[in-house]
Image 1 (tube, rainbow, N blue to C red):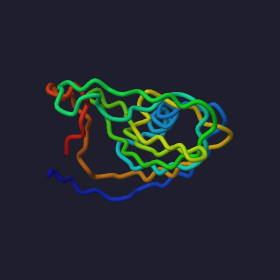
Image 2: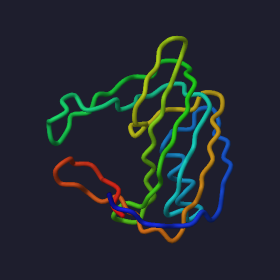
Image 3: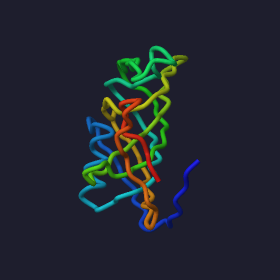
Image 4: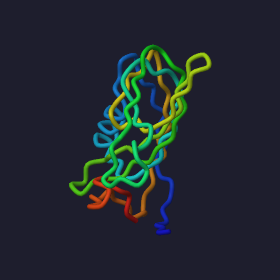
Length: 146
């Protein structure tokens, strides 16, 4: 385990509108507001897109992602971490559970999903922590380094 301590600075209440694309719209917001590091909590609706729901083979490196399509309105609850990549651009790594009726999809929203009607997010800015997303040769992912 690696740890870096920080403090909560600003807190943003964000209303996402119908058709906003996650995680891109929150990454853009973070860049515009100079948020280097933070936590995101998300609730609302998702309309379409796809999520990454695990690697196809657990022991395969780099892993081949499993993409699950989202077709139609789903409830969503998610949590994520914003940290800058090697170029200083804020990147949001957010996992969420999406449900519709008895069907549930859980995974990473990295490929992008669109908001259905409304999404609500709280962004807690964290200052003083040393955190970056750096390329990991083995996995091919940009992993959080503290």
